[in-house]
Length: 76
Image (cartoon, rainbow, N blue to C red):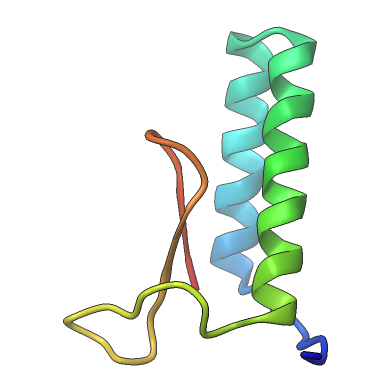
């Protein structure tokens, strides 16, 4: 059983997330916003539990990419 790791957000990543959330709140329905935040929360829980589960970058071995949807990926 894996242990939970801590996710640390940079100031830039917090600002990016706030911008994304503000955009989708003005563009999408409340149902779609809730779906996005649920997917994000789920993805973050997976990363906390299994940080090496998603593929690493060819360009930076410390960077990984978790695909949330066709339009959205998390880089960590």
